[in-house]
Image (cartoon, rainbow, N blue to C red):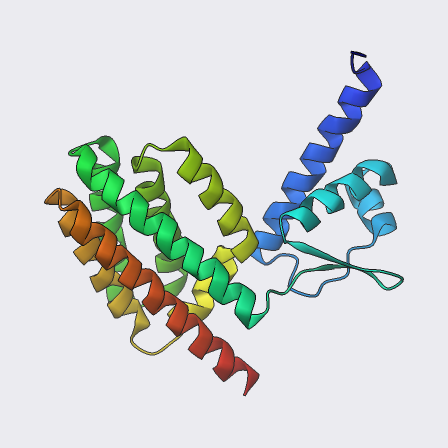
Length: 226
């Protein structure tokens, strides 16, 4: 088998760096949905040739973050309503399973970190700080997945969250009247069941929470279109 050359390794490294930076720019909303992604412009921005840019965009297309329209161009993907529903169905399954696994693990460090997260989230809700609460929501769900201690589940979850660009979507969900308080209460219920080592209950309530978040998101998106 032919060994990769230093040049090839360098090219692969540049592609990975460009893909990761573009991925974060899309997930955070710095590159909004439908944004045009010009290979030439990106090449100048990142200071690399067009080859690693092209390969990075192919990778992001596979992940569902980028849409390539033949003879038109490359754009930040916009999931359809059906795609969002399917992604949230998978989110529900994965996070429900994660909550169940974490409950069975007992008093592990992630549970204490969830307690600290909830205290900060309660304060954000009292202050009406939706931006801070959105960041804590992301951390809450992430801690549950990490606390499940299942590398395969976590890997699928990371890919899913990238496809959802969840950091952007959660703000729309939380913009619904009363959703901040509802979401906070739902998180408390999940954590109480995890503390009680009730795996069945933790999975059920976590799945209900994800469904409620999905419904709030869809309602928020409809309002913005109106």
